[in-house]
Amino acid sequence: MKSIVIFGGAGFVGKHIIRRLVNKGFKIIVPYQNPTNEAKLRILGSLGQIATFQFNKLDDPRILKVLETADICLNLKTAWDTKITGYDESILNFNDKLINIINKNQNIRQFIFFSGLGVDEKIKSARSAAILNTEKMIHSSCDNSIIIRPGVIVGLGDNFLSKLIPIIKNFYVIPIFGSGKNKFQPVFIDDVSLFVEKLISEEINGKHTFELAGPNIYSYKELYKNLSFDLNKKRIFIPIPMILAKIVVKIIEKTPFTPITSEQLLLFETDNLVSNKYKNFNFLSIIAQDTRAIIKKIAEN
Image (cartoon, rainbow, N blue to C red; front, side, top):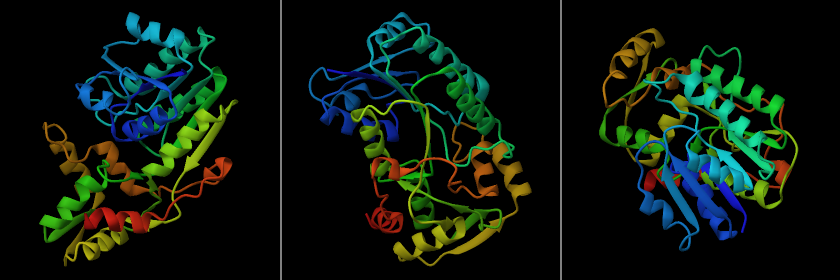
């Protein structure tokens, strides 16, 4: 039984990927740093198929041991909240240490890293800079490395619609950061998890970068209007100038209950679309599903 170590496996994306991989008979090991519900993770597979444990640092003997015997390593960790460590430490330095461990181990045949659509040197974001530098480091120092750049990932219980839909349901006046005209290209979680399953099952080797996005492009204002229509709610959308939004978010993100961070706010300033510089779903003969129909279904649930 092939074993796969998944960092960040306790999150929304990780759970969907795990569900697919356990059906293929893989053994899954999920190291985690923040408190999580281990029982809910373990029941995704058969008895003993999913192992979990908490760790603080990558030099934890348990981490070194599982990586010594693993066939594949998948890293979904690209933190948004880094009040303690900072993005270089939590993303770039973490992956640097992880790659060093992997390079000393000949058993791992694939390293898969989740980045993000639109990561670019032009974006003035500490998080994007850390991710982009991580991509460069991975490609320069790790054979059989795969970088996945997904768009905003949507699905039932995701981290985007699950926050947005209740706001539109319960408030008559809805703020939109900036003009609301910037565009993005969401992707359905089932398409992303299927892509990862096929990458692993078909043992894709070499160095690759993939952009994974759905066929539908929205402006933020257009999406908000679509959701209000799907929910049968009449809403007023008020643009909030970015300079004001940044001040407000900077204040509220210091509180324990932060609906959005300064880094997330930067996403509203630029388009988040495929660049067509990299491979996509076609590489594995997957046709991305219509996100308009999926979002409508989620809103109506």
